[in-house]
Image (cartoon, rainbow, N blue to C red):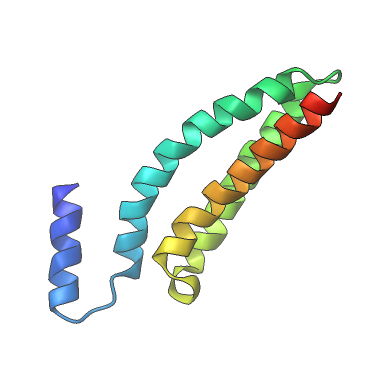
Length: 104
């Protein structure tokens, strides 16, 4: 972590773009924040009448796709939005799953 921060500081001092390095630093936090959201999402998915495994696999694949798309778009949208967007989408999906599950 310290080596990444020092690399980021050196690039900024040199006037170079450091969007990718900043994204990596932010993703270390957002990936850790996603773990509890996956656990919260597992409860309503597990409570479904059908088989929850395909839905869980679809969520993981969509998470992976979203992170890869925003990794490639970091220069366009900025590292903050690129790191936060998959997390916000997961939070929205978790909230929607809980609301829908509670409504049954």
